[in-house]
Length: 155
Length: 192
Image (cartoon, rainbow over the protein chains, first blue to last red):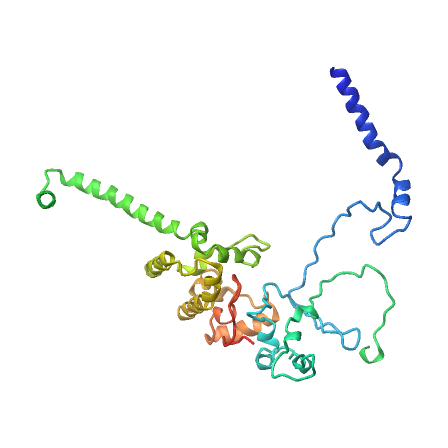
């Protein structure tokens, strides 16, 4: 009995492990159509090792815009800043009312315009959620090289 | 019943035959047990588990914040900010808190809706308390004298070296909602 069990066990180990051992290259070529992706030449079902989370610096220099009408990037940490129906922490420094005293950049008046084109006296609801467009920047290298260059006026 | 009380009174009034030393020792030991028990009981009402008994949803809110999860693993629990540390102040606060037992019995905030409706009131009361005692509970850990402005961010320094240093503002004037979700902030100074 014991011998039979051992035989079955050994057989199954060989059966399961052998394809992985012998034919990594072949399987990759058959299962992903031979197309190397950003993840490299790996099996579609393989899970890549996640990179370490990037840390957002507590403070950095103002980041230049790359194209006209790019929403300016947030050059500081925003951990714990609540932006919801009840409160908007961004506006406690960047609103027209508070920006002067806090030495912060004012929101642009374009944020006061509703979608019908009416200018309101304060931030329009459609522009209220700052983080939809403005985001923090970690020091991360681009995953893909690109040849994009800003227009002359921004260079 | 009255007879029993009378007999008790006579016993309490009459001088005992026990030795002075014995009475002293009994009194001393009794004192330790009573005082220790009292303080232990009071500390038990300072634990997170006790607070969660009624305020479970609020206690959960702290988890995303810096006072719960941070790089060095130091953390503050409810009582660190909401109960004074000095003994006399603590007793005063604890006696005030006995009113909250009444609110518990009445079920003032026992549903999510009731709590949300009352949240602004509760928050305002706590901000007012901290403003009046000059953010005493913040300062139990964050002492101004030991703040190194060269280690702080530009934005922090510009506020701490001016308004905080001169005493114009106290911690809670700017640092609201650092461990909780905020209520409607309309009309609160410095917001929107």
